[in-house]
Length: 265
Length: 155
Image (cartoon, rainbow over all chains, first blue to last red; front, top):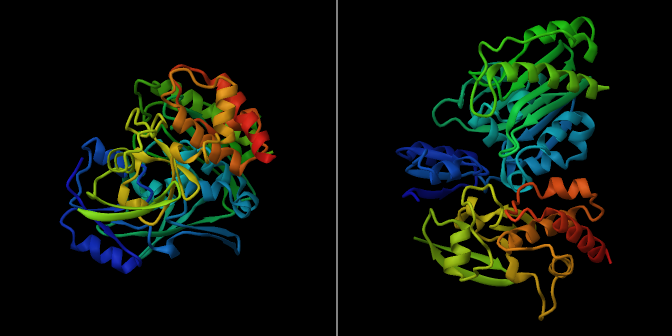
């Protein structure tokens, strides 16, 4: 399918050095996007640097009001973590709804956010909870991290180490999936935290994940599904494709937000 | 070319592979274990699912080199001494296959599911098998078979 060179690494600096030494290198995390992209000819790296051998990139720790998840932690491990389920229930539920079981057994949080697919689930959790992404050189807030469709603030050769999610008083994620791909046609993550209500939307924005400030304002005064009755969202900056038109997505955003608020209890 | 070593159905194997050789190709073409099917080759259909260290994975979306040192189970590794695995027996008894193309991947995914969740409800079985497509649409009996096998495997 391709003529890349496969390189393994057992430490982060080794992976960074191998990536730097490559003419057109790509990092391999779970491979759930990279490998299909190579097979389809959408990606043709000269070298593939596998991060799987770096054991300290995987793992979950909950302390001091935050949940920190190593970049190579698989979706299945987040979904199955009783610590995550206790600290941020919606995050565990979100991970358990990504793709299918086989994708969850291989796909990683670092790979997902680095790819920043506009219909991916994790970016919504990052933005709604105000997560911090730690790389091998710096920390980046979720607000600054997701910069556009399949675009992030990551620099050349920069590698994600972990993602820290502050816990929140209430969280819920609701998505309306494409029945074929199970990607979010519309996904809404609602969080009530120290800085109020945040509503992050995935699957819709022409620039990828974003916060729906109108719904946040409506919920700020009255946190109830009823507070969203009559609320509308503009379809002007939403995607239209064969799966759903922008105005349909706009309608679903409000509906998914209502369901998420109701699920917050 | 690089040499890849892994355990497949309990046996140590070692063979050459290109960096871009898929695990599904390695299993079917190098090891000649053609029970693992390749349907869509785009990680949608699940016909190619094998167990990798006990977790189900789509072998068309894994490089053979990523399975270095891994413990792999394919459909050929389920029966022991001519005795069908409870999942195979349940598929047979519940008529859970029609054309049979999806069956190897379906059974491997089902084994992953009931091993981790022996009391899986019908809804949990349906959710757990979302990554496996049966184009004969024979899902009803597949779900019945998985429930029956789960009960049998619990003993």
